[in-house]
Structure formats: C-alpha cells, structure tokens
Length: 189
Image (tube, rainbow, N blue to C red; front, top):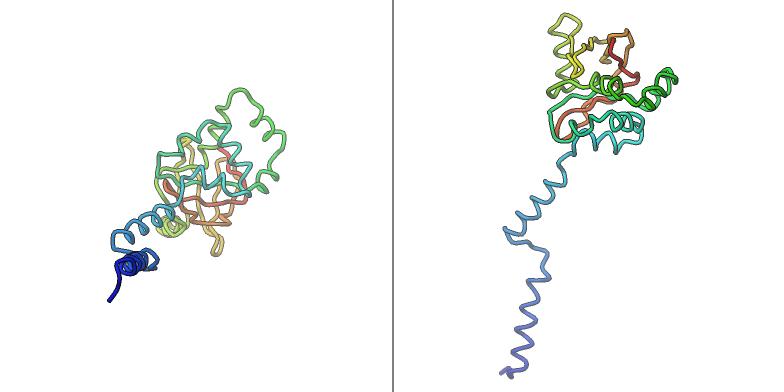
C-alpha cells in the first residue's frame, strides 16, 4: 500500500504527464491553426513592395508621392511596379526632378499610373487580351490607359508615351491586391 507522501508524488507525476504531452486539445489546436492562418495572410501592397529590395526605388517614390496611405488599406488594386534596374534605365534627370520637386503632383500621377482598380492576375490579363482580339486596355487610377498585348508567352504593357514593359514576375499576392513586377517604368502619356 502507498503511503500518503508516495500517493502525492504519484499524483504530481501523473499531473505533469499531460502537460508534457505533444497532443493538443481541440481548443488549443484551433487557437494554433488561427495563429498560423493569420501569419500566412499576405500583407498589403505597400509592405510587399517595401519588403522587396529589388523594388526599393519604387518604394521610395511611392512613399514620397503620398499615395502609400491609399495603398495601405484600400483596394483591391492591381499594381505594375518597376524594378530598380528599370528606374536606372530611365532618364536620370527626370527621375532626379521627380524625387526633388516640392510639388509631388507629377510623382503621384506617375505612381497612380502603375495602379488599376480591382485584382487582375496574369491569367485575367491574358484572357482579356485573347477576348480583345490581341490587346486589352487597362484603365489606371491616374486616369490614363495601359495597353496589354502578348509577345509569345510574355505579357507586354505599353504606356501612353509608347514605352513597353514586360511582366517579369507575375501574381505577387497581397492582402489588398496583386502585384506584377515589370522591367520598364510606365509613364502617363
């Protein structure tokens, strides 16, 4: 027969066993699943652009333009965002002027030219091009238009000034839209 101190030790040991178990109760599993799902939700477009070091120039310009707040919570949007290399190919005097100007109206217009209302995946754009007989027009937040066509299996975007950009990375998801990374800066006409 077990003495009272031994009974206490056995009870204490048995009480510890469930705490050491790798099994979760249904409630604990539900809490864990919710936390993991919350962490997996993509962040907003502004944060996605900021997190990509290859888009640091675009991130800086969007921040300077004052439209970052619009992109934070509004949407959904489709964003066509140029790489740092694309900005390096741009006329550096124009870029410098945009970055140093007191009036950010032109910079905001350029930033909004790369945005459209609604979410368009690359498949949506390709379908619209096919449905349009080889091209489609995407209306931008700036009020201008981008013409999308195909070159083989690449989506090509043409701005109002005749510049052509290829989508080099498509369908980057965020909580408020879809980002397509392009190789040339799109400018309003």
